[in-house]
Image 1: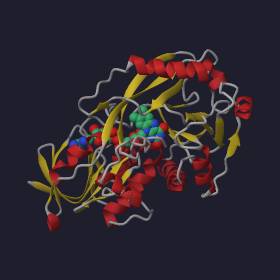
Image 2 (image 1 turned 180 degrees about the vertical axis):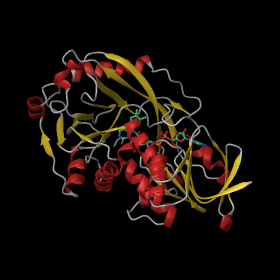
Image 3 (image 1 turned 45 degrees about the vertical axis):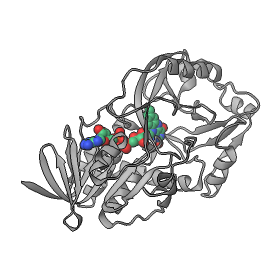
Image 4 (image 1 turned 120 degrees about the vertical axis):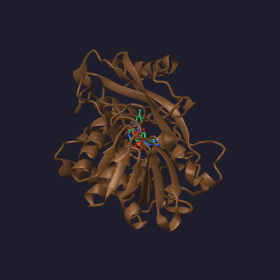
Length: 387
Ligand SMILES: Cc1cc2nc3c(=O)[nH]c(=O)nc-3n(C[C@H](O)[C@H](O)[C@H](O)COP(=O)(O)OP(=O)(O)OC[C@H]3O[C@@H](n4cnc5c(N)ncnc54)[C@H](O)[C@@H]3O)c2cc1C
């Protein structure tokens, strides 16, 4: 027997949980499927922390960050949970950085967001933890914040259920067929569901889910990793004394102040081997950990040595822009992919996916995230992942 449901969401990581929450909150009949346990560590939304920041290289992304802060605040109110910890953020630009300090300052100014540009002496005066050379420019933005990854995702799942949404874990969607005016037919857990709209938030598994619709996107999944360092003097790395930071060089690195424990988390952004959601390993690469440790010993010598590392997945588009839109030829199917920098936007992506699913329209200009954009029809020969 086929079950009728208005909306089906595939994948209950951060994005799918947010979409299910937003649909349920609007009174829609929605069911979300997750192939593994809720809160599993095989995708992109686990572990403690993610960076939320205004500081981005284009006015479009900065504009989206304004929505992100508002939508996190809205989630905090609705869930009665504190999720956003403002700690301040420092972008560090060596002279040869792929995205420049000017890209960032012009984009911030376009939205009247305050910032400070600091030369290397001013950076070291304010944050003596850093050892940087004279050619490095700092960009400080005081609203940069930490948001909890696993806990934030769990909050959206809790709120999805509180608003009447159904979340089904350990239940993979194994088939999707477009029946035109009759809606979509979705196979999950040996049952068939007919729905009006389908929301695909499957990240590393996106193309597998879209196979039945004959849609294939130019995605590359890489296995990334992050390490926790144990400083000898944790108070020197505490919130208030130590900001979030991004080294905008090649390679790019980023890190956090202490967050809930006397360790500091740091990682390289991109650079891991290409894998699939099914072929990846959970074994951190010793060479990549050594590269990060070397950078840390030169730039943040007080951070100490890496105590442990963990792996996760980035699902990247050729220009690292998000995917957010309707599938070409299948207007009842919405797709979102965060391209390895989406968590900060999660409550906004959930809201916009709910808009798209319910009305086919989006109140924010998401044209450059559409599934038939030029970079997807004719992918550039070299990927551009600096953001
Ligand atoms: C180490 C790391 C650090 C990051 N740091 C930041 C940061 O600081 N700031 C930031 O903004 N972003 C950051 N990101 C990116 C951000 O975390 C991701 O963009 C975001 O979490 C993606 O969420 P998602 O729900 O799309 O993917 P996932 O969490 O991977 O969820 C996809 C889900 O779909 C499920 N699924 C797939 N196929 C099926 C199926 N057929 N049936 C049922 N379920 C299915 C999967 O099991 C999975 O649970 C980081 C990512 C990583 C990995």
